[in-house]
Amino acid sequence: MTSHRRKTNRWLRRSIPSYLVLSTPTILFSALLLYVVGWNFYLSFTNWSLLNPKIGFAGLTSYVQVVHQSYFINSLIHSSVLAVVLVAVGNGLGILLAGLLFFINSSRLRTVYLSIIIYPLAISMAINSVVWLWLYNYRLGVNWILTRVGLPAVPWLFSRSLAFPSIMIITIWAYTGLATLFYLASYINMDKSVIEAAMIDRAGPLKILRSILVPNSLNSFIVSTALLLIFSLRIFTVPYVVSGGPTNTLLQTLVVYMYYLFTTEYFSQSAAVASIITLIAVAIVIPYALIGIRRWIRT
Amino acid sequence: MRSISRRKPRAHLAGSAVKYLVINIIAILWLIPVYSMIINGFKSDLAVTSTPVLVPPRTPTAGPYLAVVGPLARPILNSLIVAVSGSVIATILGTMGAYFFYSLSTSWRRTLTVLSDAVFAIIAMGTFIPYQSTIIPLTRLIVSLNGLDTFSGLIIAMLVFYVPTAALLMSIFLAVIPRSVVEAARIDSASELKILFRVVLPLAFPGFISTLIFVLIQTWNNFFIPLVLTTTPNMRLVPVAVQAYTGGYGTLYNESFAVAVLGSLVPLVIFIFLGRYFIRGLMALGAGKGV
Image (cartoon, rainbow over all chains, first blue to last red; front, side, top):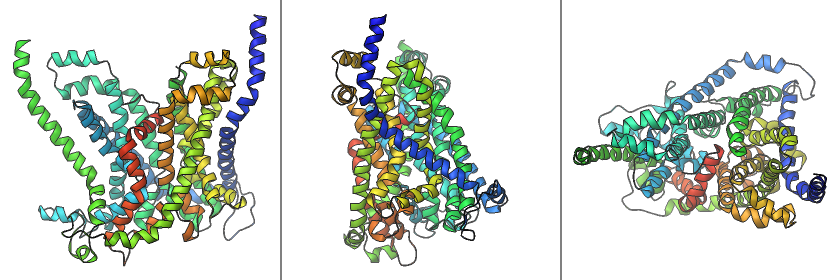
């Protein structure tokens, strides 16, 4: 026992320099991250703006001002709707597309289709937005096909009621691949014998999907939902590039509104919105990381 | 058994046809943006005014590419510098951090669980929080380091978020390395750094490449950080430079699409040839096993 402990101690002492080298960069950048997040919280309790360049403590003033702004509520509603729609449609489409891909026998073909659904995530959202802007063009875009087959032209971004849904279509197109990937992985890693038994019982693909694959994909549901929620909170580039700046109130999400307050130099109010976003994100991320991801690493 | 084998093929065939019909429709819908990117960059200015976005050009021309390659050359060079160095640094540093966690969980498991949980939570925050919400402190920090409009400023800002990302992804990839390998190397009294680079990293090399490619694509595509940390046109990165082609008055759409192609050439080529590594990186965000 003592010799074992002595050995451990010796090993420990010897590896301390190594561990310092290994851990310092990650700890340094993590500390920097905490520092900027903390600094932002501090700023949100001050009264710093263009009109008031001398920073002073102001308690919850900025928060009170912000929650009374109709544009804040407007952007909060946009972000919430986007989150709900992205989670619902992303999961729904993900479950179905993964089901389709699962029943494709050639693994090569399956990879090709999966790549087609995932590729939007590899391209910059700024570029995706430029492309979609033209696709939404009233005369030259997808309307051209719609009118040719006898459907009415859709006003897309030019209509008050359709502008934000048009943005949501872009995000659904971009992020559905993520959910599809997690569901497909869960289907593929499932016990084959159960599925084979169901096939022998002449269960169709839909039946297998509904009664075997989906009920056993709880983990994928949790992962997809958490990630889609987190990514929906981050959606900045699409509304920004599509509207050519942060000022289009039809398309403002929380992060866009926060950036708008920053550019107009309402710094404390911007920091207050940023703090609210951070709190929402932390409430999702921390449980997800510690329960969802960590558990997997430990085993 | 017999009736199954006799009846199954026809139902199977019909089901199969429907399956491929649906997946092909989805695939076509999903490919519309990239299809229009590819065809429209080859349209002449004249063709642009008379043809819609979804119709291919009758006489392809390289004109739009020649028009945008000049203005886009500098942003592409800038993006290459920032994304390549940023992702290599982030991945190496993140791997070191991940190995630190990995050894923590083997050696002083009980005593340091709380600490390692706390640091892990911070890493997850760095990976997942909307990084836009740190805009004011982040710009002030970079300004105070004289990093506005510099490569090092952009790279440091990226590292704040992507070192944690790389550490998180590598933690997932290292988790499958058998403990016995590391313990054997320790008995041979190799230093921890040596164990990481000579023993663990070769075993986790696909994971390392996945992390590198994932972070490279993220840094290349990041729009917000270069938006707030660059002010001079000379320092613009690709995603910000692309904004000038959003189709305001005077922009012809063939140029927008040529820009889109040139601006996504690097990530698209990586995705086409090394897509499975990128996909493995995405999987690791959910701590999932591979497809």
